[in-house]
Length: 359
Figure (cartoon, rainbow, N blue to C red):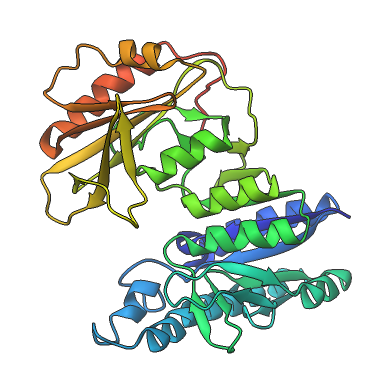
């Protein structure tokens, strides 16, 4: 039997209705003969009693990082126990495992750890007994047996690494949207969703502000040559497939927006570098900044063709153009208007390879 890894975010496991919908997907995989590993986030969002941000608020701002990580890990433990119990009540045998029970080893960096290995023996044993293995996302144990968390989006990363080391057929990230939109529908209402996207393009979009999947998870998918699907917990559509060497049409792929940022001369440690025409600038988050960065990612276009696509913008802006994308640095008050203009201009007559998924 093949293995699939399914990841459910906080909104999917926060309510009985959400858990029922999530379990329906697991039941479908089980009925098709798959072994299932479920990775869960903490239940709900800020304000919910067991959400990660709610737990963080219980400690002082200068709390020791090891205390903070240990506390933050509790949200996923609660979620795993509740979700496994819900599966059992549905007649699907399941077991919750904490990260140390699942053998997840990290490099020990509090708040931003990387998974370096997984002792998969326990997971394999539980799968052999035909159980759904529910694992806490976002965390792992250091060599000193200290609880460490992976940082924001860590449950996505947990799911992909577990999938890679368990040689799973695919990883399914279930969330509250029906897939990956060309641009955030909150910015452009009615934005189309794409059926598939190349891993490299998705990684670029995620780095520059598209928050649907964390860039570290996409990087791990590249490492393990793992296909990742983004689907809605609450619908049955197939969603968006993120795949290596996807057969994208030549042209624009997607638009990302990074708010409250600014440009700086690059220094050692800067990870986001806007580059074009021989100029390099580091892009850093600056809370309260009145500037934003729009990034348009292209497939199969030359640098010159990308440059031509960005001509005659209706607002004053600074451009960085390279062989993969165009970065547009503008005042935040103009960002939404420009995003809508770019979407209409670049995706108004979209290729047949991009279809709106009915919801």
